[in-house]
Image 1 (spheres, one colour):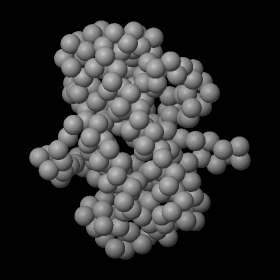
Image 2 (cartoon, helix red, strand yellow; image 1 turned 45 degrees about the horizontal axis):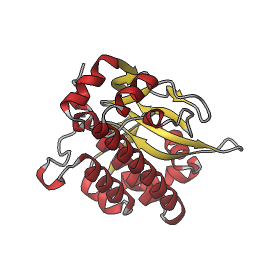
Image 3 (cartoon, helix red, strand yellow; image 1 turned 120 degrees about the horizontal axis):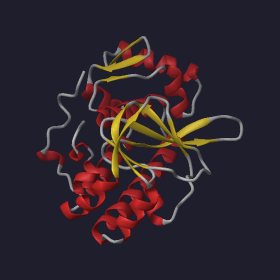
Length: 245
């Protein structure tokens, strides 16, 4: 299993805080399409993904869904339980399967409330996720489907560390809050331009720089917010130049 450093937020906690949390963390396999919690349900686990990617999804009365935020190795799902937010505000669904660790909410809360530095990081993380949701709301209204799809694919690539993403067009349409008939021509255009290759429910990103040029500003805004949260200087890091394939 990967080490705790596989989750960037966990690795930002002070070593004594990690050691206090360690006895309460257990390995978990996050299976593709698994629902971790539904809106209105009591949060049953605090999840730190390693290579899995989780979507926080809003469901509407008519059955439509749209993704509000995407969480992966740079964050945590369910941490609001440590802040007395016992009920989930949205559905959390695994969009890319993988591994991570999970903590029982009450244990997580006890440790966090006893560790001011850790609690501060959790609050900052929740603000960052909220900022991502706000950015997504603005993006869905103001930016066209091509820019939004490029932004979404880049974010998924960053969190999974993989150029090949296991997404069907139906799933992409659901996450973007559009019809499949909207996604299909956009994906075809990106493929014709050499940015992606689509086959058998998988999308392979073949030209990252071109995809970035076509993405809306929201991709960089969200990424910069997480860089600030995690204290990263992107100029001193490899830019995910060699993801897994």
